[in-house]
Image (cartoon, rainbow, N blue to C red; front, side, top):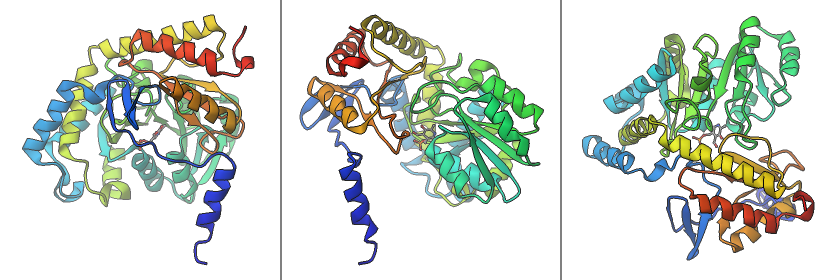
Length: 389
Ligand SMILES: Cc1ncc(COP(=O)(O)O)c(C=O)c1O
């Protein structure tokens, strides 16, 4: 039978308790969501600042539609690039201290585009082991030499850079998507400058969450274009919309406009989405939502400490609890669901074997009582050895 692997791959996943299924969400408002008629507090979304339903952002989307229609109608190099796109790109570049920025339809596409356009058979790419799949896949499918360094390990990175080439790209994340900890960006940028390598930061989970204007980890650390030549960020998480950007030198962006196939041969993002995204960035500038989020993060970590619940070290919105095997992870998640809390079980192969976890995410749209309920429920569902008596 042709493509017989389809059936056997699914059967194998089922057997290993790692078969993926989608959840049909009936509705969601703030941190609440309804599935099959039941209401849950959502601790699994990436809407860290509650921007998805911000009135000004929704209004900007509507205004954008009345100005441009619902879609861009063409790829950016044909007639799909509008003033709405340009304004967002300029805002990002200016506020990040970069010469230019370029929009993509998703973070996945941005990372793939970067790897496809920049890496070649004589280049070297070195990434953190925990880098997101969108980058790893891109690097693996390029002709470049590709190695990885142990998570956040500067010595190991330095060792990897012994084989550096004229074109060497080092890639890491501002905030790691599954662990919630932060990349050692300042130290890495020094190492890269010393080795004449370019540092690329995927800040999908840092944008909005860090930085005085919500421009993420690179803004928070004050790292210049020279120190971090490539910044990638996404809009589908703290910004509450969808899409992504790459920011850097004018030459880099002009090069991507000419050679990044995911940009050239893809319909431009809807202009109304660009308008809503810009409105969201402007809305978070005052820091109010960011402060709420960080208060929730401190409340959660403090309550967990008091209750003896082990959470992985993180000061970001991502607060994982390690479970160690897929069955325990799934069971804890289902029990939390019975008690009205939605926490996704993250299992192999999304995370390494034995590191299955409850990936708890916090948002400015939670209430203090939601966080208190979360810690109460964790105490009930976690195996005894995960909670100090
Ligand atoms: C670190 C990281 N990079 C890139 C992406 C892809 O972004 P998008 O969801 O916009 O495709 C994600 C998505 O989860 C991510 O976590």
